[in-house]
Length: 157
Image 1: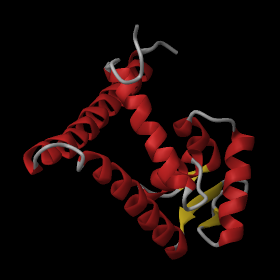
Image 2: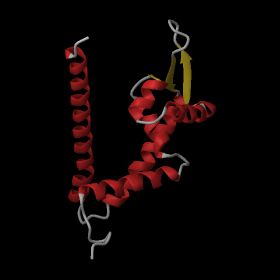
Image 3: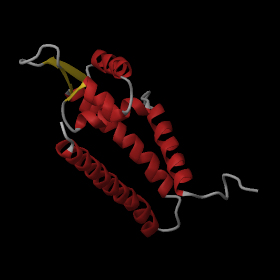
Image 4: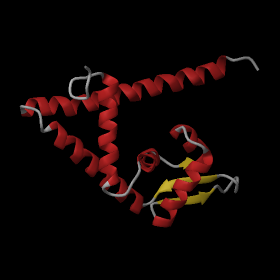
């Protein structure tokens, strides 16, 4: 019989890691959706519509989460000088501090799990593999964006 104790797959492991990230964030009253938004905004200012697309959620969902962060002083909304309808979202110093706290809590949880391994070398390998996954994910994202841009340039019209 297959049980959680003896079943292993990449998907199962990734799901379990995601659950531990979720549990770590819950200790500081933050959801994974909120965390993902802070991470995305840490890469630069965004418009709500493009942020919703990148996070694969609806625009009203983004608005609700942004409203909460604006009330906490973590995100600032600014109107474009050229087009007053365009609103840009950016992390404030409070938002950056919140993200740093989030990162510390998540890292501590995952490092604590990795420390269950038998040697420091295995711990380094386990944590280093997350860095490799981050690189692979970034390369995959860059390739998809390049393909999307190329298909727009090539398409007739």
